[in-house]
Amino acid sequence: MLTESYGYVDFSQFLSRFFPFKVQKIAINAGFTCPNRDGTKGYGGCTYCNNQTFNPGYCTPVKSVRQQLDEGRGFFSRKYPSMKYLAYFQAYTNTYGQVSSLMQMYRDALAVEGVVGIIIGTRPDCMPQPLLDELELLARETFVLVEYGVETSHDATLQLINRGHTWADTVDAVRRTASAGIMCGAHIIIGLPGETESQIMATADAMASLPLSTLKIHQLQLIKGTRMAQQVAEGTLAVPSFTPQSYVALCGEFIKHLPLSIAIERFVSQSPDSLLVSPRWGLKNYQFANLLNNYLRDNCIRQGSLVR
Image (spheres, rainbow, N blue to C red):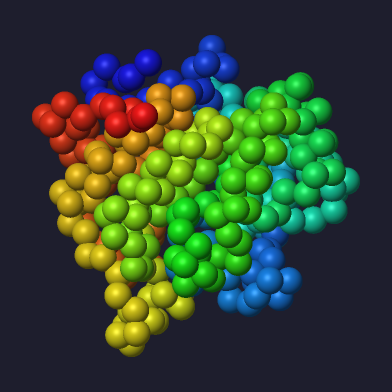
């Protein structure tokens, strides 16, 4: 079912299928690294990545998982005393470790008062079958969503941005996860260097072909201290220069390709002003949402209208 005021299935609708109460994600930094940072596949990480851009203040690996969850609960419960929570293992690759240790960490999070499920952020090349087998059992007990960083369906772009995995890795991981009865989310970036609008829409069609439950979309952001920001400053790499209006129009085209079975969690990301190089749109999240929703309504755009 589409949200009444605009033409796509949003994340709150998705969550309402599972919970008769309000739930809030609490981000956790459990101190993981990535295989393209520690030398297993490469060094330096993705060229655009700076994890400081999405870690809240309470979210730091020097604190235990329980402490981070308790501080997150304290932050939200002042305004919403009856709120329940999803433990969101967000920073870096949260399936990159020993299976027994990982499962203990997930169960520790679920044991915290008010936590009613977990979301695990990871990479498509970091889902070993023994861990997936354990998660299959856990998903029979509680809400489990595995969120894969996909970014694009184009292997040339993945190589350019040093992702260290392929589109085939994504297809394999998502299909195995869904086959195990575990919900899958994906994350993609619009505006990666070298990609045309037709290639962006090809990624939309590729997403539509997978058994996904949720999708995060956001604009490419250049962040201080990243290799991509340095490449752009040196003139060795070019990235698109979207205005809010041109980006909204791309999002509108993108969602036409997505089936209604995929809930869209977000369209935009806001990095800290102190770290952001571009785009500097100067819009609050609600302002962007209003711009997007008005555009979709005014142009009669509906999710799934181009799904074949």
